[in-house]
Amino acid sequence: GAGVSQSPSNKVTEKGKDVELRCDPISGHTALYWYRQSLGQGLEFLIYFQGNSAPDKSGLPSDRFSAERTGGSVSTLTIQRTQQEDSAVYLCASSTTGAGTDTQYFGPGTRLTVL
Amino acid sequence: GDSVTQMEGPVTLSEEAFLTINCTYTATGYPSLFWYVQYPGEGLQLLLKATKADDKGSNKGFEATYRKETTSFHLEKGSVQVSDSAVYFCALQAGANNLFFGTGTRLTVIP
Image 1 (tube, rainbow over the protein chains, first blue to last red):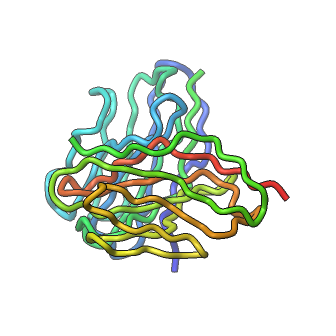
Image 2: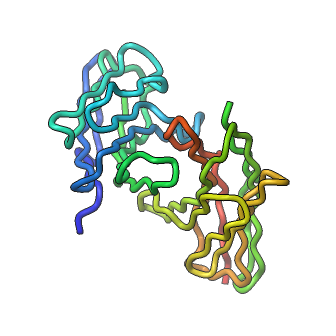
């Protein structure tokens, strides 16, 4: 079956612009995660959605970052007024229920470059 | 807080050599432990996992045993191949439900 998909695969933007990154999780997966992979920071958790519950936003680095998940499926990560330090690969993952024993399946990522 | 400490790389081995990548963790409760692999130009994928103490995860000739007494989950393979060249990440998932990753270890296997 189809895995997690993300778009765009690459995004180049100018400092100060807003960007939207999209994630399509595996069908039927109720849990969805966003992570960021950057050279200086490794792999960092950003935000977690589970069903209709309020999202866990504890990993978002600043209020310029936000995310939503519509209809319990597709998610969009928005970065406002991008900065050069936002340059990274943004990874989306989904799992069946979000339980601690579940495997998270990752998408190919969106490489964001802020000039 | 929860964290993972992973052996620093890079690691370079000859084909058919024995591989160990050390991973230790700190967590409250009883986390699940994972090894993820990222091949060149590809996304992150699960290599193996263990969800309780003394469980052994295995896949593609790789193994790791969940050792609660030493809080470790070391990755091993008896005979590496060139195709195993990749970056390996140890990770844990505890009550918070997000994964905590180690810094990654780059493995290069030379013929």
